[in-house]
Amino acid sequence: MINSLSGRLLILTIVFVMLAEVLIFVPSIARFREDYMLNRLERAQIASLALLADDMLDPALETELLNNAEVFNVVLRRDEVRQLMLSSDMPQSISATFDLRDATAMSLIKDAMMRLFRPENDVIRVIGAPVREAGLLIEVTMETAPMRMAMLDYGKRILALSAAISVFTAFLLFGAMRVFLVKPIKGVVGHMQNYAEAPEDARRIITPSAGVTELREAEEALKKLQTDLTQALKQKERLAQLGSAVSKISHDLRNILTSAQLFTDRIEMSEDPAVKRMAPKLVGSITRAVHLCESTLAFGRAEEPGPTLTMVHLAELIGDVIEGEKLAAREHVIDFTTEIPEQLLVRADPEQMYRVLSNLVRNARQAIMATGQPGQISIQAFDTDAAWQITVRDTGPGLPPKAQAHLFTPFQGGARKGGSGLGLAIASELVKGHGGTLSLVTTDASGTQFIITLPKGDGTV
Picture 1: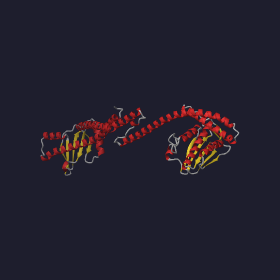
Picture 2: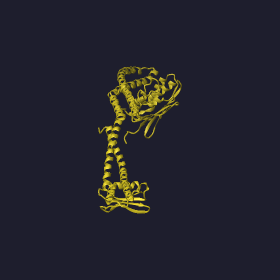
Picture 3: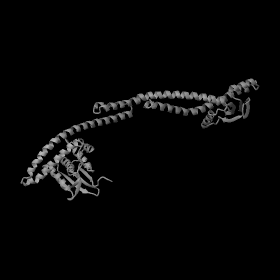
Picture 4: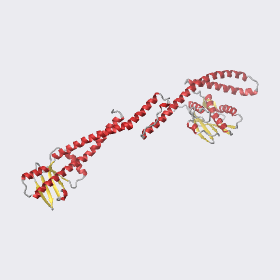
């Protein structure tokens, strides 16, 4: 129970209430001491009235009056005359004098605490103003032991009452917190445990119902977290199923392409100039398709090899990409331009870099074709001391907000209807494998620009 939230709250409540009572106790004791001495002054004044009524009092009656007032002497000043009204023998000399007429709160508290922790029985002089203005002042001498005993008794009663109030208050707060806070928190924990047993089940997602604002916000946040997690798990399950299907398709497609690769040997032997010119490109395309199928199968086994880095002639590689996209553009007017130094060599895997550039250029071409208007795709490349940089720019309509939010996320970053969003995800992963980055520079109604950065160093510092 001590380790529970409600248990600790119970203990803290008792402690804080007791602390508050202690802070109240100190001035209460000071006020009790002041009232005690004022009461003795008032009794002494009443006793002195008997003497004013009869100048000759019996000594026994005078002693009884002093005993009832619990004082030794009574001095009353009336009409500028100081008179010793009643007196008796004192057991010892006066140790201190206290004037209650102009005493401050701090001085009363200080004197009370000193008396409370001083067990000696002293004789003190107390001066005050007579009640009902029956004189200028009245002073008495009295013992401190009875006053101290009364202060201790009063203090014990105050502390006992404080303890009872603190315990009662703590249990009330304990019960209220269990009902209004601890129970709802346990309900949220129960929802979390229930959801953890089957996170794919959307029926287990919490329905916010708390009346406390903070708990309601926590439930809303938990609902969003559970909803996102359930969707992510379903997405991963679909990706796993898709991966299995793609692996099977890639296996059979690789076999088909391998057979087609054998037929290209005969095509290369043709004497037709057009066939001779197109045959190498056909062979290259089929070879890349075979490599892609093999990579897909390897990825399905989580054994996709890293890039084989060589110095690639970038202008030729980009020329192959553009020639293929020109054929895909058919009759649509798209102007392909390049600004690439002829002798620029880039350290990269030629097959993987072809896939990266092909995905970027293909996306640009499809975006322009979707508008039904002419457009332009330009590719620029340059190198610095630290890296090679390749930019792909188009004059398409730009990426929609959803595509920008999930730019490199498979199946979520598609910019056109029916698109899978895989192209940019694949390109980004392949560039990362080279130690580089693929970044979106700009995208708006005037077009989109991506930049590929490939570092020249080996990654060591």
